[in-house]
Length: 121
Image (cartoon, rainbow, N blue to C red):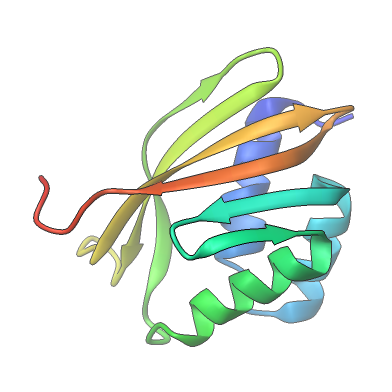
């Protein structure tokens, strides 16, 4: 069973930042429940394949030099975790957000992504 700190790392670095579909798929299998729900401003996506497709879509829409970087501390509860991130060229983000994870039986069952509004500091 993975702890919340590991799941926060995996969600950002091994799934959403991973451009190789095979490595991403392996990380998804060990990180999320079969029925994982991912919610972002674009909608709600249910299941591992839908989450993988959404991650691929986000990466496909960004230049190759864009990276996800942690943007602060990891926050951990018994069945919840949160991690702020930034996305763009290293050290020069074009987007910022936070992922809030709900954990069930040692895997992520819900990922809720909130974005910092454009123009906010």
